[in-house]
Image (cartoon, rainbow, N blue to C red; front, side):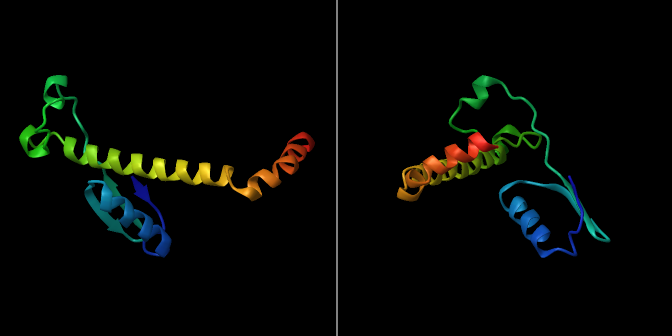
Length: 110
């Protein structure tokens, strides 16, 4: 991944640092106003090994990053569930129900 404005925009640096905090990155480099990095590649592992309780990356060897992928998956699942809860809360709110006819009119007119 290559990102522009890394040194110029604080929001870009914050986003990249947040991404790096929950995802393993390789070869992180900065030059001028850009930064670049790679995510390690995951190789397919046998299903029997993935089903074991000891699915630690150290057990699988250096070329497997199962542990990092699992933690990233858990984080993304938590973000999705939180977003779904917010969406349900908005839909069940009084203001959402009151403005429903207006949204229908807007949809017809556009």
